[in-house]
Length: 248
Image (cartoon, rainbow, N blue to C red; front, side, top):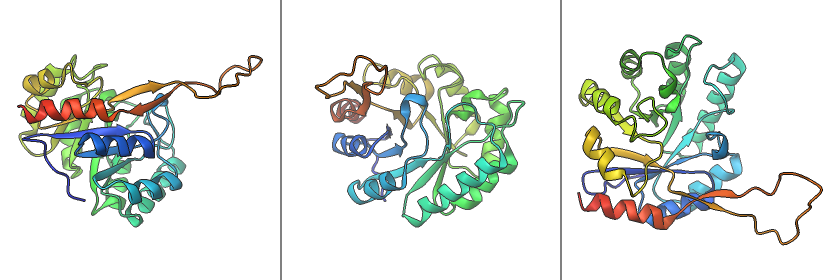
């Protein structure tokens, strides 16, 4: 799937449902990172979600490969699960996958990450925000580049890309075109231009999300939970960022 630039930039939207992915496309996004369970940082979507999104969305679809929430230190069984999910994505014609595996000491797990990369090719491969949990980002950058990965999603080891802008700029300088460094975390219309200007990034990531309360009319007051609001990508928020990118 061809991913159209927006001026000189690319805008990736993290979409946690088929409906969110459709909203992202309507808003003018370059591509989506497709996941579910965004409230827990995102996990791999179901077969049904993958099937529908490939049928209904016509921009780039890059699937998050993450078997659970929590850390990025995985068992052999979890690695095999991720390989199986990657192979399914390839069979279904997805454009890319989004992966990341760490060692217990905060370094990139090069052996298991390479297994995932090998399973993914010829799809595009992004190293996700596991990067923001590494001990040495400059060494980790060289490890990810050596693995042949195409892009890194990172907040610059901070809670937001805006706060991490100084490190993001350093990483982009060190990468020197060998890999795309894509800022993400807390990106919206209020700060997208500042982040791009301060980092020199050419691709940027946002969920463009809004909270949607439950539409249930009946509420079972004797039971807690199972009626939480849901996050949904907003085509209006995406469009706002697209317009800002076009003006740069």
